[in-house]
Length: 112
Image (cartoon, rainbow, N blue to C red; front, top):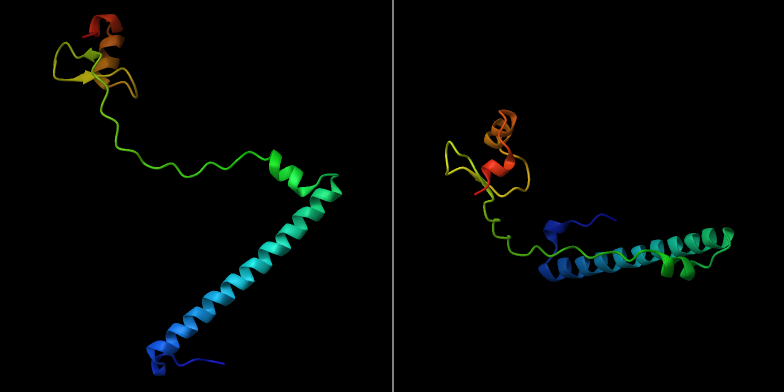
């Protein structure tokens, strides 16, 4: 049965959309019920009750809400050749820091 959507009224389209949504929900619940039956059967074959396994399973963590961006950390090190270049001491070491350490300077020498 093919529906000619272009010839349908808005009310008919809305009714069709509701019918489709209802059918999707019915099929999803049937699939879910079959999956639960299969899981219960598998648990039983291994000597467990499905509810026992579900209670022991680690809880799902919800999606983290993105909080406001954290403010940058205060600078801990500065480039002696260009004091405007600073580094907090976290994350990737800047090239100027690596170069200074490789030429014999101690990180303590670069502290602010």
